Length: 438
Image 1 (cartoon, one colour):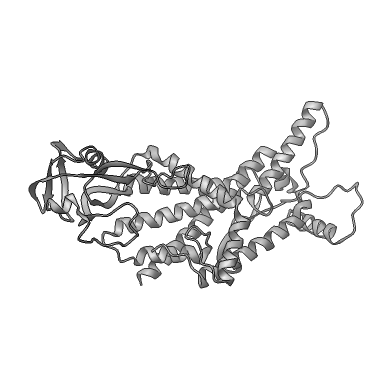
Image 2 (tube, one colour):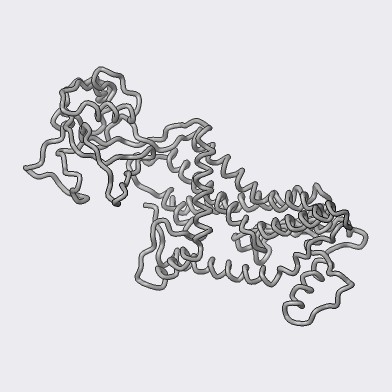
């Protein structure tokens, strides 16, 4: 049941994000006088709809997107030019004709193509920017309201021995291994270190610094154990440990090997808990997600090839593999059904919100790809039109006609087919070779 709850929460979150995206297009379009004939969330057969004013609002059966129908998206062709023959020319002309049929008599001035280039940019950028704003709001709520997962001064693990740095994962202690200082001093999982070497300890970073500087000498330590202050003496050993960067990732040297240094070692590991952060960290987090999205888009052909190889072969999918709607739903279900010590409701809610925030960043980045039928393709058309008009104005020439974006329809149909194929592949791969969070 909890798994299904996670999936349903994510479905609702995605539908709301899509609906707000389309509002980002519709509101400025109406503001600029463009007639909006339809506002739909989803594709396929209509499940529900109501007409208010001149716009039909509705929900369709396939929740994989949405659209607003802006009347007059494509300008009519130049009547002075002879119509070309051929399948491509017919496709372009049919798009022009369909666009013209939507314009009511006497309302030619309300067609989208008559907007100035800046207004077209506002309309077409409105949707993606709404997704970016949603992501910023969600990340802010998580960071400030819930916090980010970080180490505490409460011990989660206490090692029994000092294993060498090159010990394999899962290695156990032997009689020849040196006893770990924390275990030798009687420290236990669940203890909270409140004082070390005579100094009050407020964070794991402070504690780790004090331990690293105290190697080889007896040091007083005070822990809170079930509400009682317990004093002990530990002697951190000096041993080689990996060098970590500011995010806790092991630093690798030019030779590809992890960098190490000799520091004091106690043999303890922290518990993790949500720790509220300042709102000032949000821009950096959004920037990191935008960068990761840009990299994913730039490497999309290779990533899709890897997905296909895993889906139809013996290769395993990488944990960083891109996923589709089924994969996102699976992630949400795994989050809400996780049975992990310390994985409480707050952490579950924070993870779901961050998952939805990441999805909105992806929607922003993906829609900004400069190809029709994506929003980025219309943005390019508006920029092209604006540049032509600016050049003509500077040269004292007549105002050019609106950019004939209908000529890009063959490319738009090709992009649509590619996107549909990618979506189908991701759905199949997410079923037969899923990427799991836990």
